[in-house]
Amino acid sequence: MTIATDSKTTSYSAESPIRSAVGGVLAFFNNNRLFTSGVLLLLLLFLFGVIGSQMVSPKMADMGAAPLNLRPSAEHPLGTDGLGRDMFAVMVIGIPNTFKIGFLAGAVGVIIGTLIGLFAGYYRGYADAIFSSFADVMLVIPTLAILITVSAYVRVVTVEIMAVIVGLLSWPLPARLIRAQTLSLRERLFVEVAKLSGQNDFEIIVFQILPNLTAYLAAAFVGAVSAGILASVGLEVLGLGPQNIPTIGRTLYYAFNYSALFKGMWWWWGPPVVTLAAIFTGLFMMSISLD
Image 1 (cartoon, helix red, strand yellow):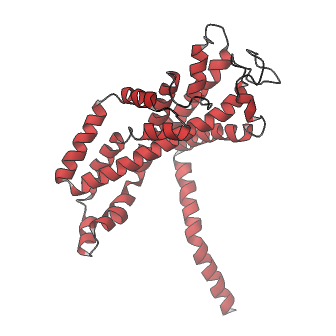
Image 2 (image 1 turned 90 degrees about the vertical axis):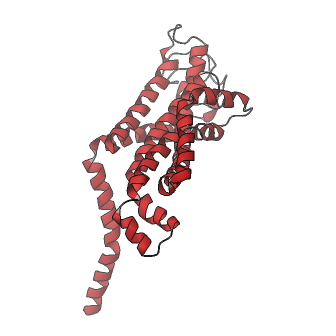
């Protein structure tokens, strides 16, 4: 009887951290309805791409795969464009690719910005002056002009290369945010206690300061993803970026280039515009909630 009781007690204690973590996550989403709504909106768009890929062949997104300029019908739910592509297939492939560019660019920008912000904020002095000045210069220089120049000289642009190019120019804002918070946290009492306990600078940064920046990192990542998608769409509308890979921006480029708006082909430019509006609405709701 005692053994069984001990076993139950052990099982409960082993499961309690997991239950506590799950409960904390559920409580966070329940208490942050705006954030939850934004996540659900983006999740629905992502599921559209995942589920839609099971309903249509990717080859239908190739040029000449379908008759030209067909209005939406049962056979082609979103019609076809002037290049002979099924718009439903284009959106199914283009939405995940656009998400991929945004999330990769956001990750690259936040990682670089976090490393620079932590280093400059913790060590201050010359390191802070150098990195802060460099970040200020990068914030002043028009990012779009640099992106256009770099993209024009890159011969083969894939989704991954596009994301890296955008991400490498999106780190200054996260770096400024993390630097400001690090300057404040390094003066807190728990950092002094960590120093007295024998922890070195690396351990203090990783185990003491970085965990306290989780909310700021999440907010910075959401902002970087939004900026990455906006920058990539801007480049693609100008004709730069991935050439033969369906994305939301590339779809708009073809729609504008072939005068879909003046021809009344709303099914060519309408779905990309609505999708972008939904993406930025979801990211905005998440950003406001995190702020």
